[in-house]
Length: 561
Ligand SMILES: [Zn+2]
Image 1 (cartoon, protein in one colour):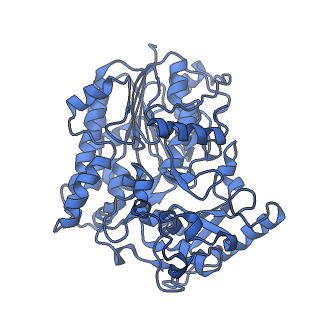
Image 2 (tube, protein in one colour):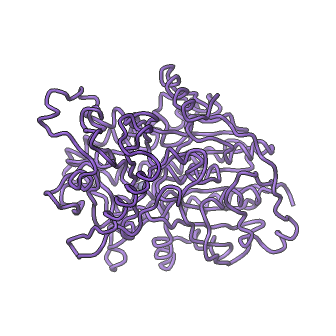
Image 3 (cartoon, protein in one colour):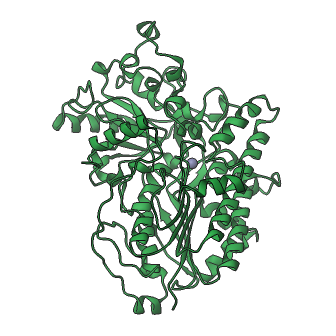
């Protein structure tokens, strides 16, 4: 057999809930074919099932305790300030480094949390954490010019597109239509650039991510619900388009590269979003978090730049502020105190816990760790964690009288590794993931739940789920098989094995041996492999100041000497 070559296609947020529904109606012939000719499995994502945790885990084959990422930003060590994360925060070895070290040429496109691009053997175009078009987001650097010449409107993620359309949306009679146009534009661009890169030069491993399914499902999950009820939806529904056009691209690529093995995966699944949980308000009213009153803060507000948190957060702010309306998603995911000087907005001397992000991450205010921590580590820390977990577990939504919190994880129950200490002390899983945390919205006193549509013109109708997709087909893989379960951490070992490469000793997942044909496994037993050198993250593409800051924080975190 010639040297195996493989395409790993990431469909951000893709779920079998939608795929199976559409396949049953003959609408995704290529994915249907892949399932017939190959293997499928539900893919368990990270907790939280969030792209910033999941993609770095897939890329390194290790749990978030290894990279310390759980949101598009993280708490700066020794501070209450939040800072945006990027691919430079992820320690190697990564999938493209392992493949490159074995002499394989790669083609990497649009992987979330992959900026700055790395010196791979082949080409690499960074994803949504790229600061903007002016940044060096390609390897080799000259590829950028070529790409922009060919796609003059190239917008990284939705950064530029959002900027251009936001205002159109605000003035648009139909903001959903404006958003629909934006998502379709993004989808077409992603598929066209992927196509261009695949053709540009030979590769052994192509790793492409289409983010459109995630973006479309956030706002247009209700289109899927209409389909489920037998109703029709707009022919240009971004949700339908995201699946159908990715399916068509898959068909083109499979015809063009008939000898390649295929893996199609998502970083998490999707489902309906029914309610919001005002976690920060809960913490404040229940005496965990002491926000200073307006009077206490009077005259102490910092400049407008900080009151616009997405500015302080850099380009990722654009992603966070996808939702238009009175309160954007970005604002909803940011604690109130980030908008001001955290020292002034919060009375930390009376704060025991604070929340970050929209997935249920909670930190305790620990003495010696936080600048003004008050909870002594050790027994008291454990006691407070238990008390808060119990308070959350007891919460009931007055809407139906049922409990809302399914489980509160202590971080060591979920993660292990060098960055365990950087992760939230508690992680709250809300009922069926159909509830989402909103930080900066305070309802009536004592009312911690609300509906998203109550306060915005454009609002999310879908939210992430833990169960993503895994599909594999082509040379080496079994035919027509369903596996009961797979884990996101199994993807990297499985890719390496399909490429005929040994594993790497630090990988936490396993080769999905049942996904391969028995004769392939007999001829190619799993080869354990040694330990690849851990790689320090690169910091290219930042201004000098940003680079200095990045080096400093990486040093603090122990990535650099
Ligand atoms: Zn998402």
